[in-house]
Length: 196
Image 1 (tube, helix red, strand yellow):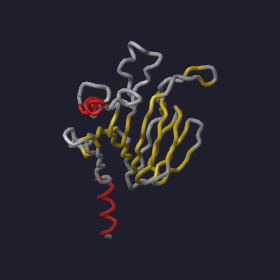
Image 2: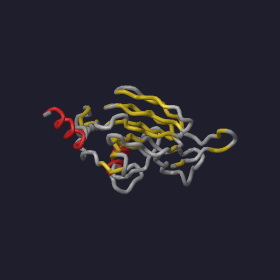
Image 3: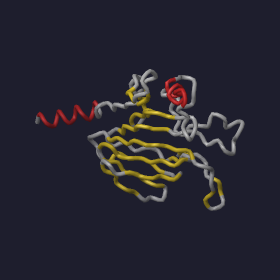
Image 4: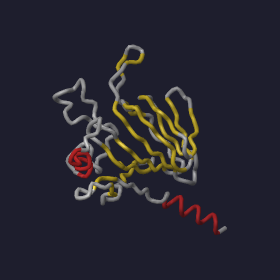
């Protein structure tokens, strides 16, 4: 049927491109404006889909003075760069102040291929992850699973997890805000970033 081929084409092509808008201030009037910024850059994640960084900062609270946060994001030479792929953003002065410098925020878009199963992993972070399109399964290393539908979200506290697209025919999308957290212990052991 014609409808089936349209659905198949959409699955191959994937969901429509995500549009990200960044606001700022007009330096001559002080009014709020939408800034002219490059489109999102997606990186392939083999066997899973694609990921892009919508925005990132190198510190919390974010330093907006003189657009330093925006300059760091648009630069190719900083850890907050739109071209980088790290999930956790290290602090700018973590060398000088390792105990207090936690790093910045990272906003990540995941576009998950139909039927894709991500690898089990943990980042030392507090993640707020929202399913914005399709349906995804969030699975923990304990074997517990939850099905997220559009609008559902997870507050993830440095837990070992993976993402699974619940559909074999349609891509899914998750938008995650990743915030650094202090190191902490579980069962007397300090948790570390881990990928299985």
